[in-house]
Length: 429
Ligand code: URA
Image 1 (cartoon, helix red, strand yellow):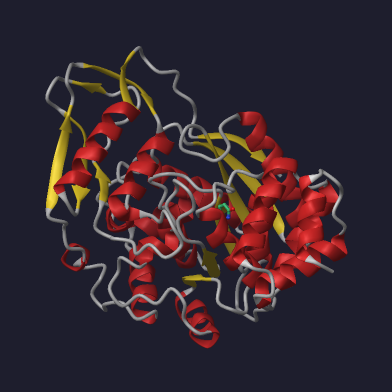
Image 2 (cartoon, protein in one colour):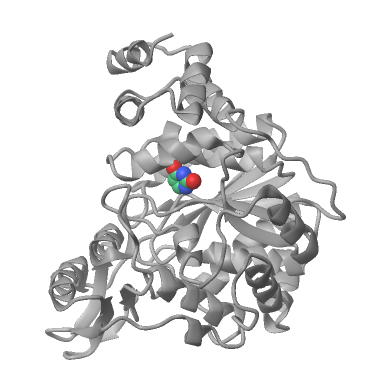
């Protein structure tokens, strides 16, 4: 087989059979397919799409490009994954909260993708935290603590690791087929019994309309359940950042505030809703109350601290997290030029502003600056007075803050009362 033939078939909109997709996934994993070919493949799938069979075949081929884990633990092995949003650090809250409820969460996460933040990049903001431990350490932290959030190593879905990095910088993220194969290849390789997927819809999401979000949800639910993993989806609103902070260290801070009970709000609510959904799939009833208690009692924060320590981070992170997260040289409030009500927030534009500040990658080799981003972002419908901050910019340099300020002004509009949507909009199982 030849990568050019596979890409040419995609370009012409011709069906690509399961053998060819398996061959391509293997080539992604072993490096025999080049970056240029991976990029062309991703663009072909984005533009032409795969058939239902093709999507399932690509997902399974990417799962099988590495090894599929098996667990022997004293409780259900569960996880949640999101299609990606802005200010969305639910993984940092959910994994330890679920662990405190007696389930095991081997969470294999990704890096930033396009305008969205990535859980691994956020964890890199914690000094010493190893996002790529060897498998034995990953296994022992899951067993001892109940949760470990790590990246896919060379053994877990290596085809996704390769394609993910290429998609991030080649405008090929927004594809139902690629998102489904990317998410599920990792999750199915992690050997889960139950999974909840958070499919985001709105200005900060890859899926901008409810129809697109529904189609992706159904495709993922069908594929994952067929593969033997009990899976459901919550379609959730992303018309504004979930937490009022965007950027790596800033989102760790937002998650710590929720885990330590300093703050509630949408990040807390969504974490509880997603967590309760997967606990129910794992056979645990009354998940909402259990998760609320896990957070209010400090048990979830304790699990987070043990996970951080188990993966190489500071022993006292939870007690003193601010100390480990230095601030950048420039912090600037973007003051409202007039009074009014926040009517729209372009989440994608805010996400891209954070990437431009150095909080994400524009090319694969970019180094991320964990300190930069936006904090105290106003919420939809909030009334702001002239001079009041719309957000605070955290930047490494003044020129970058100037560019981000213009982007924030453009992205956050004052005007009519917005049409408020529910945080959890639909459930698909
Ligand atoms: N998260 C992933 O892991 N992959 C995608 O394609 C999108 C979100």
